[in-house]
Image (cartoon, one colour):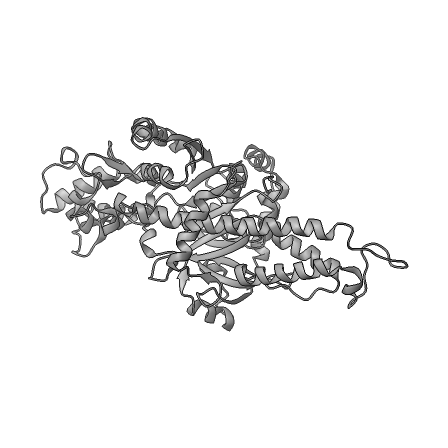
Length: 525
């Protein structure tokens, strides 16, 4: 399948022929559909907190002990998708075609003064002409000092203030000091970027770090990390044969945000907040943003403390309590004889834990054949990383959704699924999708330490059967691409999960440049 040049190429990427062969086999085999039971809704699966409960969660966060905090910001890739419509408009103008009144590129050009990166010295005197529109598009996309068509979202100027303009990256710096300070007054931020963009992020950081540290009385510890090239996956043609470029080399593609589980796994902090680079808003939204982030962190720490408490109780009550009298061997117990092998204290504790798992985390356990199996399953469900995910009411925004699914071991769990993971040929799955009330804004808080204070190995909790296969193209030729289980999808499949409703004002993504005209990104008028 591979020639000597292929093997050298594979090795140079930090991978192996065996791994690439497994990827090709996955294209042939595909991924199984998720077994959906129901959508997670406020009736079951999504917690809708009262004002008092929110207040209690904030207080819990502000008084809890935490072994380090970190803000984790996925920010890889260029902003080309953000400007796709502008590129199309520029091409049309260069070909002598006019722009329809409702064309995104025209709306952008006609409102150029409303964008934070507008400067009359760059764009000149505004005119109502195609020539001026072409100038605006060209200088935004291709010409320095902007040239945004080839730059990452994080360094694009998003918001204008009375005396400054902030990039998306800067808004994350401001957010971090508001709700992610450590006890020593520092704020740790990890930003995942592409290597070729690091100098752009560092330029922004060096130009504003001292200003914000002085203004907010904070010390920023900012780390830039890369998506590991070894996680890139090979592309195949429509017949599942390795895709060859014009030079006959293999084509590798980034495997999606699921590859960032390695970056998350490298963190030493216990409490981590995850939020995409483009989900920021103007300063007046900061109080609400910070409040609900604290709500999520408070709920995460509440769940952490209950789980850790249960695990310590299990340690205490099961020590030397499970005995196996002759003639039975250790590890064996006949069905229906639990009372012989389990003392009442442990039975009652297990009942309490099962009620907690069902009520708080939507984890229902299958019937266990014997008491030891029951304890082992309960322990395995408790002793896992924890995530609390904000969920926003469906208002037509893109994004995955929260569902209750059936696991292979017979239990149920809360999962975030993308549309491609839903089998539309299955009536139950279709019904669940149509009845979904909320979607995932990627507003996630994680607890990454176990009850003994050690970091979890996050790779152990990935569902490798939850990846995606998508259709793409390369220079006009069709191909199939393989994505690893998404960071908040299959990569966190075996985590303990809680969904909490948060208001839509906390979700203000910038997927296209025209989103910057929305109220959340404009100064008050």
